[in-house]
Length: 134
Image (tube, rainbow, N blue to C red; front, top):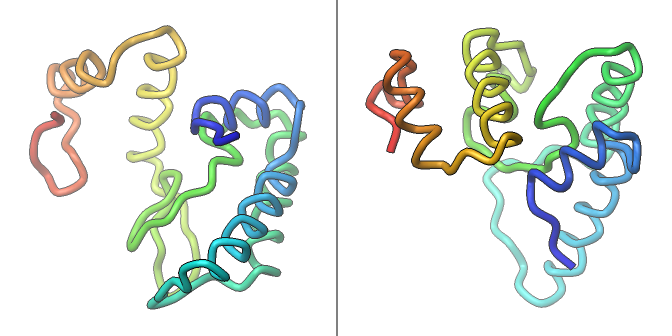
């Protein structure tokens, strides 16, 4: 069964699973799929680093931090979970994280993506490339 980002984030936030367990499942799916269709990666974070990052997310949650997208696996060229990749290191992007929290809260209340986009535009939040949300 494929889980949605919302289902994964909720399960991690509620302690049903951990970010590390999600990372392990995701790495296993990548390995299984590579047998069928080998993927071409420009760069792939080593498994040990993926798991270390997941354990870091679990530690932040255990300390009481609210991370709306905690545990959600993603692929990105420049950004993931409100974090900007710089020199192969992740650094916080507070402005983006603020909007991600806002979007996650609206989605949790049942808002459609269209309504969320309209709200972000109304509030003056710029999309990734500086344009409007659609």
